[in-house]
Length: 120
Image (cartoon, rainbow, N blue to C red; front, side, top):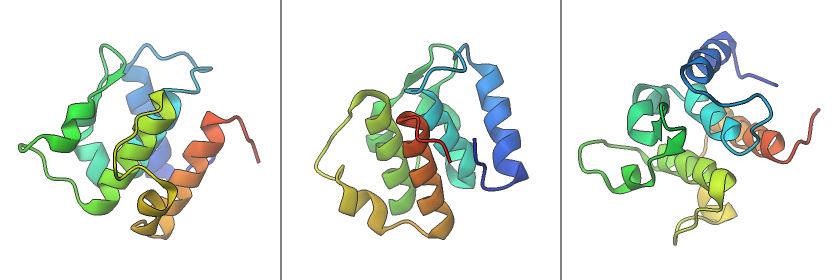
């Protein structure tokens, strides 16, 4: 698995170990990978994902108690889409990828590779 840096790797291992996800779970791992690779999402991880139940919290996108910037929302939508096909009016390739900077773009592409088992 390609990590953006050592912090991303550390955050991923930390989140993964807080769950009961299996190493072959190509639906949940991309979402955890995305959360771990973005500092804003990592700070707000408990709003995005229920680590005990291993389920995404899709309502986080409309939660007024947490503020996500446009690129964070795009990454969350991508992670949810890779998990269970989640789709809303903003979940299309152009909208998801347009707002991403270089690191977040790499994060998104690598998450898709993980989901579809496209290894480098």
